[in-house]
Each structure stands twice: as C-alpha cells, then as structure tokens.
Amino acid sequence: MKGRQIRLDGVRTPKETMRRIVSVRFAEALSLAPALKAARAEPLHDFRIACKRLRYALELFGDAVKECRAAERSLVGLQQSLGDAHDCDILLHMARRCKASHLANRVKRDRERAVRRAQRLWQRSASDGGSFNSLILLTGIGTRKA
Amino acid sequence: MNNAPDVTAWGKFLISRRIDELRKIQRKARKRWSGGKHVHKLRTHARRLRAAAEDLRSCISNAQQLIDESKDLGHKTGQVRDADVLIRRLRGYRRFAGPAERAEIDTVCEPLFKQRKAARKPAKDAIDEIGFRKPK
Image 1 (cartoon, each protein chain N blue to C red):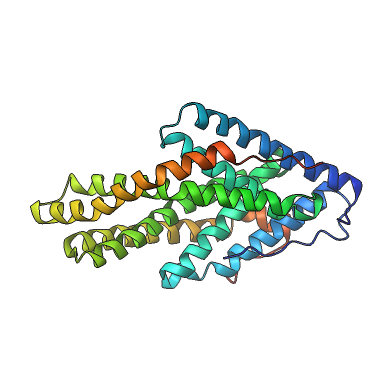
Image 2: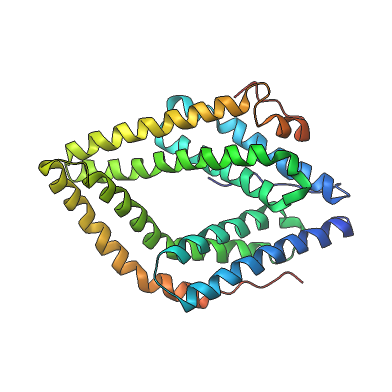
C-alpha cells in the first residue's frame, strides 16, 4: 500500500514540517488500525506498513521528538508482533499448498498469539495515559476512532 | 520544490544522513557477504531511506530516484531475507514437532532452500551495484 502524499506547502520551519509529517503518518496508522479487529491478512499487512512509516518518521527526527520515545518503543513492539503474524500468513499459505495440516494448525495458533499481542499493545498505547499520548499532543489528533 | 530555505536545507541534511548510514552498511555487506545479518541491516536502512525520501519528497530533487533505488535493493535482497526468516521459524517448530509434522516441515522447507540459493546472486549484485546519490 502506498503511503499518503505529504504536502509541505506553506510550512516555514523544520518544526512545522516535522509536525505535519508525523500527523499524516499517525493519522494513516489510526485509519488502518481497525484491521486489528478482523485480523485479516491483507489489511493487517497494510496496518503494519503504516506503523512502520510512523516509526521511521519518529526515528528520522530523533531528539526533536524525544517526547515520543515511548510511542516509538510501542511501535517497535507492535511491528514485531505484526511481523510475526505476517510471517505466519506466508507459512500458512505454503503449508496449505503442501497439504501440511499439522504444520498449518501450529502456524495458525502462532498467528493468533501474535495478533493478540498486537491488539493488547495497541489498546494499551492508544488508551488514556498510554504511550501515544505524546503523539496526540504533538499532532492534535485523537485516537478515539481506533 | 516550493519550501522555505530552512526546511529545504534541513530536509537535505536528514536525507544525506540516511544515505551515509546506508552506505556504511552497504560497504560492510560488500566486504563480508554472507547473506545474513548484513542483508537484514541493509534492507532496514534502505526502508528508512525510502520512508525519509517519501516524507521529504518536496525538499529534494532526486527523491524519486532514491525511492526507486531503495525499492529495487529491498526487492532484490528480499527473497534471501524472507527465506532466511521462514526457515528459522520452521526450524524452531521442528524441535517440538512429532514425526508427521517434521516430515511436513521438511517438505515446506525444501522450496525455501532453493529460493534462498537462487536469490543469493541477484542480491549480491544489487548490493554491489546500486548507489545512492546525495541530494544537491
């Protein structure tokens, strides 16, 4: 999935630029977060990529957004779990093609665990006082719709 | 490009820093090519550069070229990396599997070994060939 285009017309300072970029990437991740509920492979993959874009934006700006370090750490954990789920999706496909039912069952269980981990982490981060608070303050975007 | 001078200079600085990081890893990967650790690091840095070039597209003139090169490097090294990750996961499963499941795992592993072997040369070529030009 392609990331949203970011227009920087009218921004005058690096700080404004940074805020605009993080806002777009945060909004993108929030809009795709419902994928966690149904946990279908493709939407979950798109959500994983959106989280990655947000994380990379925070990393790029380093100390200028140091208040977002906790959010960055949550995104790392989230990416780990979503990455595990993604690997399981690929393996599941391969196992089914080879009619490997024992393996498919094991991979399915592993995938469910990875998705549950991601769901818990997202809920915790997006709740009041969670690690995304700094992102909400920086961007002015709420997480209620997530 | 229609940004304030401060923003443009800052954007170029951030992108150049990403390119420096990527080149450093690329040099290591060229020297000690094993298809493992360095490929993973290189792919991660290429993704970081691509994300930065997409975010700051309007600050630099060669953003699209950097995006395409990062994408190309990621794509050409992806097969090796994907196979590595999946094989490692399957090996982990194998330790706790019974005989029937072990046989299934071996069957699923086989094409992954082939994929990894076939993808090594194009991955190495990409690491040797792709260069990343800093924005002017």
